[in-house]
Amino acid sequence: MLTLDDDFWDWQEAFCPSHYLLALSGGLDSVVLLHLLIQEKEKLTAPIGVCHVNHGWAEEADHWVIFCSNLCAHHSIPFSLVHLDLSAQSDSGREAQARLARYDALRKRLRLRGVLLTAHHEDDQAETFLLQLLRGAGVAGLAAMPSRKVFGQGEHWRPLLPYSRENLHAYAIKNDLRWIDDPSNADIRYKRNFLRHKVMPVISEGFPNAAHQIARSTNWLAETKVLLDEAADAYLENDLFAALDWDKVKKISAEWQKTVIRRWLQRQGLRVPGHLRLEELLRQITEGSGYAELVYDGVVLFYYRDKLAVIDHIEPEAAPEFSNNTDWKGIGRLVVQMGEGMDYQQWRWSLYPPGANFQPDGASHRKPLKDWFQKAGIPPLIRRRTPLLWCNGELAWVGGIGVADKFQGLVIDWQKIPFSANIAPTLQASD
Image (cartoon, rainbow, N blue to C red; front, side):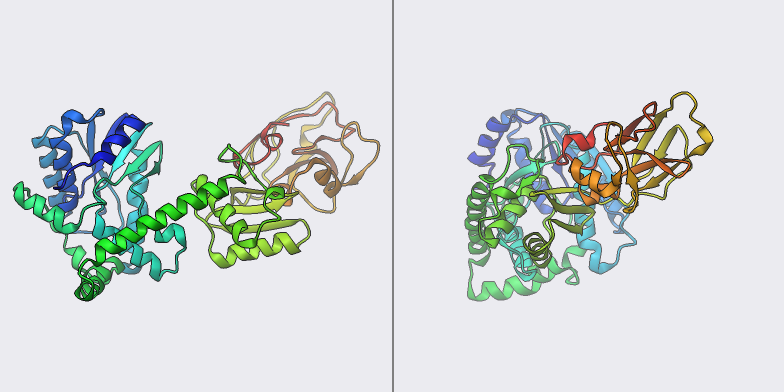
């Protein structure tokens, strides 16, 4: 019998959701889940809302919107609509682009302690496993879709994973439900549809219970991932965004080092770099000069002084004209207070030049700026994002270090852009 099982009610009791947001496409799966929620409405401890995402590529899209809106109105369920414009996407990239855009839109609509509900089922799970297998995924990918996970400000639940597409169809027929058939689901140019219509039927001829058995294997892989995560967590700080202390992992095997790095990134909600790129980072760490760097997916992983940290990959713009209140893209806001006798016209901004010499206030002599950065523990990546202030060709101030000996009357408040939570607090504070 298809129902919201004990797991769902245990999750509700443990998490205490503020609201439920159902992603309703109008197809069989989500219509069945909506019906189940309505049948059990008295047991729900939080209100239900529905969100329909219009991807902007189907001629029938307006009809689907009307269908979903009327269905919700009939049951007095709040309905919201999201419009996406993916019509310009190529067929090859459309499926992945739609998924990312859809979840991003749903994430933005989920309030604190909210729960996103989607109607993925056992057959979806089997297809996801095969997709990941054919992409060469590791344990995390082969574990496919978790039934429950952190999502935005709340969580994402998939309560129908224990049931097959056949179970859902039988339930819909029994309860005289109406739904929409999306013609694109038959288009085998999309990889998931190819697996669904061309591959799974062949597998099922020889293995009639194939989808169930594959989904069962994903459960074992998910359990394996939990064990790996728990083992990796022993090397990580309680603070999810703390830098990874390399002293704790440098003596374990390279395989475990990669496992710990993957877990560290996943806890921060970041995608893990590919196998070869991760191996190259480890090679740089173990064989390099004390600094390693990997740029991918809009972030930078870097290793410095036995710490592995991650920040957004931002290339600062060229130095702007000097003013005492400067907004510098990629750097932040710089508010300058100058002492008496300091000429406003003689100042200019720049970024860190490796050959510059500097004598900070209180220091007894000048040294290359690189030496002062090393003494302050500022890694090379951050140095390249460090603003400098010059007066008549002389270096007067260095972000993160302070003013030069001759410029004690100069005060600069550097309101940095947020690099990352796992950069040392001293690098975040104003100078």
